[in-house]
Image 1 (cartoon, rainbow, N blue to C red):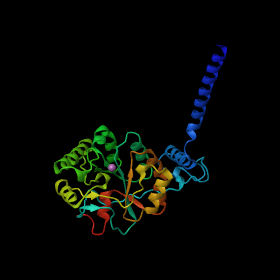
Image 2: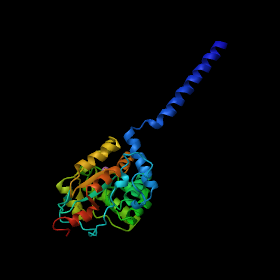
Image 3: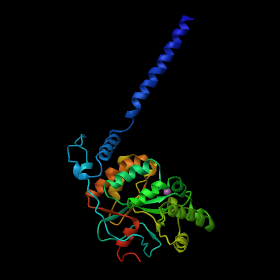
Image 4: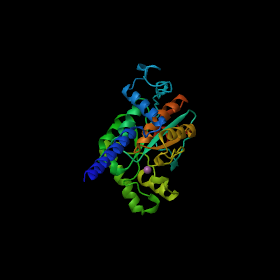
Length: 289
Ligand code: NI
């Protein structure tokens, strides 16, 4: 019996030791790059939104800390709300390096507010294509978006595959989210993005006729929903962006948010100026209607 008790005790101790080891190892599961980005982001958020208060070398970070070099997005006075005369846009022909950052599928109760802090600190105005069911769950986040100068677009009620459902179902999907956005913010959406990018010319025509929305596609897709890692997402965005681009990302994924300070700061450093989708359309050659 004594031997059995000893065995049991030893087993218990082994399990306890393994559990403790896992607990110790877990926080270091992130790659050094991810940890660096997290640290940069934390330093950044803690530093508030005045870039002038922080000087290089005072962050307490390593020599690779870059956020202190970020630019401050210039306020662009282009008009909002114009939807142009095209049925669809993936980019806009512009003379200046304007780009539009877009975020789909939210709002998310944690990730979206975190993103809004990152955008606010850089004076970047983005466009959010919200899913109706999320919009009704978190109307206060929609109100914050509008209060901070962002634009909200329609991404259907349930993230529906619009090319696979009836015209009546499309109307219902779009109508629900249109009303949800108006109810939350008082500001009607002016553009839509088809979930999965699934659309066709008939659908684009009908959506423009019934809702007045152009269908907004994208020129830059970092495939962030596949979660390739924050550094990869940032690199893909920076390397693929050219002037007039509409950039796609998703504010429901935490690693995407983590990628943003790096991606946005590098684009700002290259001279890009961020505007909303309807501003980009207005800034296009010929301007909005
Ligand atoms: Ni989507």
